Amino acid sequence: MHFRTMVLFVVFALPVAAAATPDPSPDSNAAVVLLRKPVSGDPASGCGLYDPSHTITTTDSNNDVVTVPDPIYPLKNCFESMAALTATGTTGWIWTTRNPSASAPLLVDIGPGTFEPFFCDGTSGTGPSKGWVTLHGAGRELSILKGGNNGAKITNCANLSFIDLGVQGNKNGVVWEGSQGGSSSWSNVDLVGLGTVTGTSGWIDQNCAGQTVRSVHYFHGSRARALTGPTSNPILVSGFWTACAESWFFGGEISADISRSTPGFNYVVAVNGGFLETFGTAIRGRVHGDVSTRELAGVAVYPGDTDTSLFTVAFHGHGGNIGLSTKDASNQSIAVHGVQAGGMVHVHAPGMAYFLTPGSTGMARRAIRIDADAHVEAPFQWSADTEPPFTSGSSSRFESKDGEDLFVETDCDNNGCSGTGNKPHLMIYSTACPTSNPWFDVALNACRL
Image 1 (cartoon, helix red, strand yellow):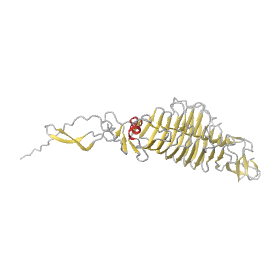
Image 2: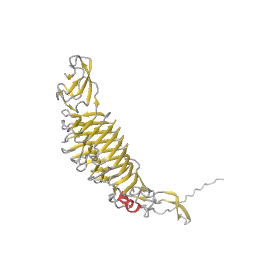
Image 3: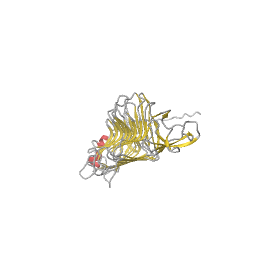
Image 4: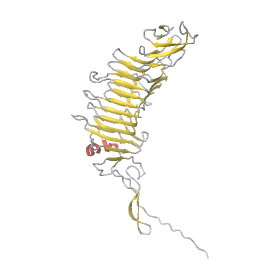
C-alpha cells in the first residue's frame, strides 16, 4: 500500500501597509522623544516599526478570521524632521510644547540619517530661557545635522548636550551667539564647516557685545574641522574660532584643510577674544594646491572686541601637538606660524609638540609676539642635530620668541660648530644674534659660529 503525503500551504492576504507617519499626538511631558529618518519605499522606516506583539484581525484565503502581526505599528513620541522639533529656535515642538527645564530635561534619540539643523534661541532679559536638551545620535558618521549655512545655530541657551553626532554646515558646523552666557557639552561629535561659501569654521562663537558672563563649553573626544570646497574661495578659514566663550577641549582634534583661499586669515585655532584650554588635542593645518593665501597659523590669539579688564583672553595648551604644512601648495613661500599672539593676551603652552613644514622658501615661525603686550609662555626644545632647525648653510628660515627655543648641536669643538667637532653645545634662540644665524652658543658664551 502506498501513502501520499499532502502538504497544505495557507496564504494570508495581508492588507497593504501604508507608510508610517510621525506620532500625531506626542506626549507633551515625554522625557525621551525619537527622531527617525524615513526611507522612500520602506514603510517600516522613519516612525514605522514592525512589532510582532501588535496584531490586527483579517481574513485568510478561505475567509476564515485570523490574527496576524501588524506590519506597521507607529512609534510613539516619534518625529521625522529636526525642523518639526526646533524650527527657528523659538518655535517647534520642543520650544513651544515641551519646554524643557532644569527639572524636566529632554533627551532626543536620533537614528541614522541626515537631518535639518538644530536651532535654539533662549534670549531673554534675565539670562538663557531655553535649553536642557540632550541630542544623542547613532554615531558621528551616521546621525548628521546639516544646513545650508550652519549645522546648528544657538543663541543664549543653557545645558545643551550633543553626543555621537555629526554637525555640518556649508559655512559653519556650529554657531554660538549671544551675551547672556549659557553652556553646552559635545562628546564624540564631528563639527564641520564644509567651506562651500565665503568664510568657514567648524565652531564659531561670536556676537556677544556687552556680555558680563561668558558662555562655557566642554568638548570630549570631538573634532572641529574647517574645509574648503573645490569651487569655494573663503576669505577666512578656522577650525575653531572663539570671540566670546570659555571652552575646554579634551583630546580630539581641531583642523583646517585648505585647498582654496583668497589672501585672508587661515587659523586652525583663532582665539579672538575668547578663552580656550586644550588637553592632549591635535591641532593640524594643511595648505595645498593652487592657493593664494597668507600664512597658516596653528594658534592665533588676539583680544578682538573683548574688554580685557573684564575677561582674560588666553590659550592654554596642555600636551597635544601643533602640526602645520604648506609644502604641497603651489606657492612655496607660504609661512607656517605655530603660535602667534598680539595685544593684552596670554599664551601658556608648555609641553606641546610642534611639526612645522613650510614650503621650500617659506618661514617657520614657532612662537611669535606681534607686540610686547602679548604674554607668551611656550618653551620648546628641538631635536639634537648638526644644524639648527630650518637652516641651510648660512641661511635661516626660522623665527621664534627670544629665549623660547633650545637645541643641542652635536658637531662642535672649542672654537665653534663648524661640523668637524664631536662635542655637544646647547643653543638658545636669540634675537640679539644675526637673523641668518639666530642662535646663542652657551658653551662659547657668544652667538653661534
